[in-house]
Length: 329
Image 1 (cartoon, rainbow, N blue to C red):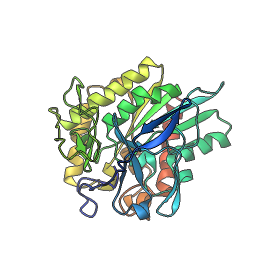
Image 2 (spheres, rainbow, N blue to C red):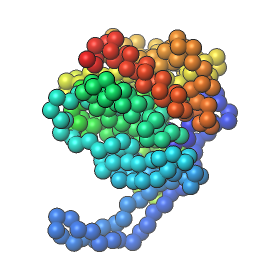
Image 3 (cartoon, rainbow, N blue to C red):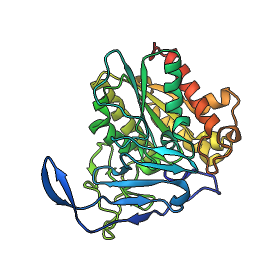
């Protein structure tokens, strides 16, 4: 998500209209010692970006992604990205000798909407590993607004280069299935898998200035398609000898709302097809087991994303799950 779109939350429901920013002049760049003319990058910004600090880079394969080497602030909190477009510290693709890696895929919840760099659950988890002298790096590849389809495409092309030992998919039930169902989300073009065979369409992705591009809608049921993409992420993990964890959440925002409960039931029913072949962390159930309310997890962040305490709890719950399943030493 860019700004949270959650089923049944009137104060935050609705798609965000993005403001497109594009420069058309070419610029001189040096590439391997050769001077070339190159079009400058295209950016997308959120309404109110002066406050949120959110700005993204158009990408012809993924739709959009984080800007590399960016320093800004979000809601007054530190916001930085590394040279590989991640909201995280620098990591080389080559894994250091003796190190273990956990790679996290996700949208704005993983990206850390509304909190500072150090307060994102990925950073909290890595700091606790360091405190306990456990050799685990936690790499945050989250991008606001991405659907599970974009996360899979990123992982298969670039994320695998980090040689992760564990891959965690932070799956937000509130809009991840919707994000996978069409080629336009939040007013912005993106790739889309149009069927259960994962036939990819809308690539290269039309530029944000292209007003002639038409929306392409997937033919498959949104929850079925989401589970099919999750299955493919798990298969990709198998191919690189990495463990896969599906971490689902979204019911915690309105656990008694009929539409939310129905969406969860529909997703769980579709997940049954692959449930036995993956490790599944139902974060909503864990929140309930720990007696954590929506207010406790989000107070101070005005659109339903986790606050500092929420990220701390996610880090604790995820660590307990990894340990209980022998995924960390």
